[in-house]
Length: 319
Image (cartoon, rainbow, N blue to C red; front, side, top):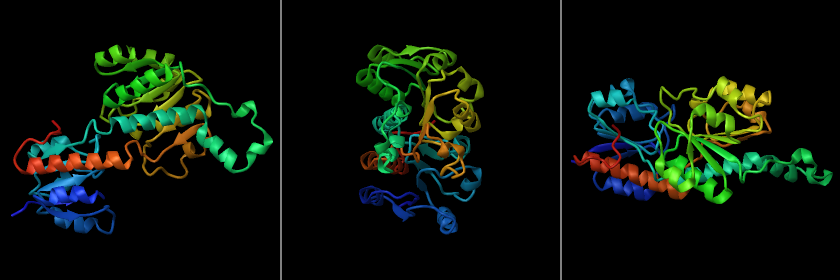
């Protein structure tokens, strides 16, 4: 008998076909308040779970006594309680590396859009204001030959450094738990303390995973250390930043602007002050959101799932 698994995210037909070769699939394109009771009922005898964003903790696992593997279609896994999973000997996997280039593209897009005020000027043109003339008040700032500080020089950070170094002749500073000698050799990146990075960078790019140690990593003190001309970019997780401190820094001119792909609450509340600021570019957490990359991520997650259920070690097993 084929093991029963639950897919709780919309995926390509080819991904489902790969899983269906060895598994009985219960498919939810999206979980909501209406179908969640059905999902919980199906979970009772499910051996595998694949999707992204669902909080998998002791409470949920109590509803899934047969579960053997949980596969995230994402590089992040802060939704997974790894301790609870380990206690029940349930495997957990993610999809690292495949999205590095795509997310790095998004980050460079945020840097350029914020520095050159592209969304703001797009609306300026479309609402007929060009006729009034383009004065200096609409000017942006250069990106090329500036200093880019990267907090978290992993795979994505390295790909951002590559684009910045070769494409924009930027000086790269970075802060990481450990030295990244490859980035230093290839992109001339300089390892430094977080304080030094914040003081010297024209663009500060936060790329750390969300862990208990990185919650509110960037807050009031960190924004005070930045240049008044600095642009802050966050494409990690919303909770890595003290959002109230960010709002204050932007309102008071402590920093020049911000480009954000993530927020403390998602979808972001419409009364969030960040949405009314012209010096802030906002995206709906779309760092890896291209068809090609999301397809590859789902295929990797499906391969992890099938491999684990066959009794082998999945390629991207989380420890």
